[in-house]
Image (cartoon, rainbow, N blue to C red; front, side, top):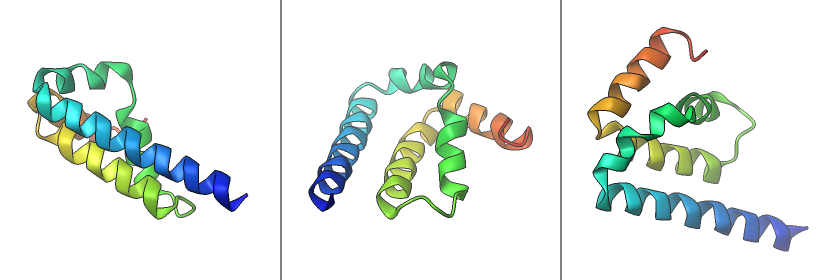
Length: 85
């Protein structure tokens, strides 16, 4: 069981780091992310007490990179003002 959780954690970190690197290399892609509808789930993950530290770290890395894009940033604000619906 521990080995499975370890590989799952490693995979999550690798995917998050890869996505952050992609968004750094291609900043215009960050404008497309809000239309996919994943921002509310990333924000909700931060508020869940049962989330593990790796999941929260990955969410923060992605949100930080997305916040550097104006379209994503404005979508964050709208999601927050509507109560993360």
